[in-house]
Structure formats: structure tokens, C-alpha cells
Amino acid sequence: MSLTIIPIGNPILRKKSHKITKVTDETRRLADEMLATMREAQGVGLAAPQVGRLVRLIVVEYPEDDEKEDSPMTTYQVINPEITWRSEETVIGVEGCLSIPGLAGEVERHESIKVRGLDLQGRAVRYNLSGWPARIFQHEIDHLDGVCYVDRSDNVWQLSGEEEEADEEA
Image (cartoon, rainbow, N blue to C red; front, side, top):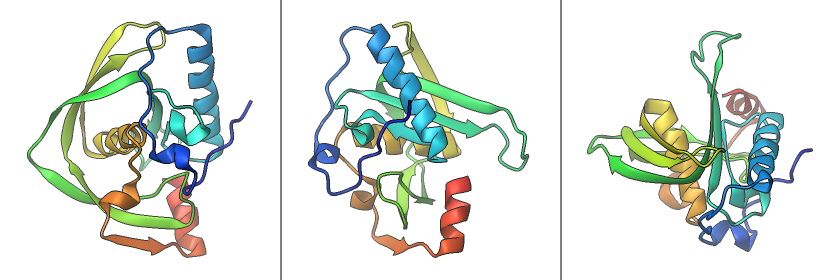
């Protein structure tokens, strides 16, 4: 079952999400539905507030090698993700958002981060991330705090039809 992605302008996207205190079948089902919804929308990340749930849950999936068409995917479903360390080095990159279709913007993010959280069995997980995966995680964790990438960008633009197609494939 696919969930509805909430567009910018909906006040839920501006609220802080609640910590998940107990990992249940409902939590796992939501994570799986979010993953399916994200894939259907051709995104690389999705946070629970984007589907109307104010809980701290994100899903992230991207190709290991985005140069290869049939590259294996790296998939994360993380409960209560928290950035525990950020590199001093930052990088400016282009971002889009499933809740803000048709726009893109340049956002400065930390090049590397460390994240801790829980997996779908409630076990502690830790990730050391750099580059694009670090950018995706920072974007999704921002959503859990009611922050959208347009809040962090001084340069947002409307995508042309061709750019939108390329952006959706990214």
C-alpha cells in the first residue's frame, strides 16, 4: 500500500516529530510502506512527517554505484536517527524533495556525519556516512525537526521538465 506524500504548506511538515519508544509491528509496517512510497515516487529518502506521521522514522535508499544502471541498492530504515558527529568540512550540493515537487536548491551540508538510531528490530545501529548518503540523511533528519531544505537554501529554482525527469531519476 502506498502512502500519500504531504506537500509543503501542510503544517505537519513544520512540527517536531516524537521519539518512537517501542518498536512494534505497526512501526515496521509504516517503515515498509514508506519505503514502497519512496520507491514509487522515485526518491532516495523519506521521513515519516512527509506521510503525515509525527514520529522519528526515516527510510533511505540509493544505488551503490549511480553510474551503473543495475547497481545494487543500499537501503536504510532507521528509527530515532540522531546525528552524533559532523565534519567541519561542508559541501554545497543540489537537493530536491518529494514534498516540494518542481523545485531544487543548493544546500550546504556536512561532508561526513555519524548517525545512531535503531533498526526495525529495535537494535542499536551506527553509521559513518560521507558524500551523498550523508546529504540524504541530513535532509531526512531535518524533516523530523520540521525543517525543509528550502529553509537552508539561498538559491532555489523551478525545474524545467527535463531537469525534473533527471532529478526524479537521481
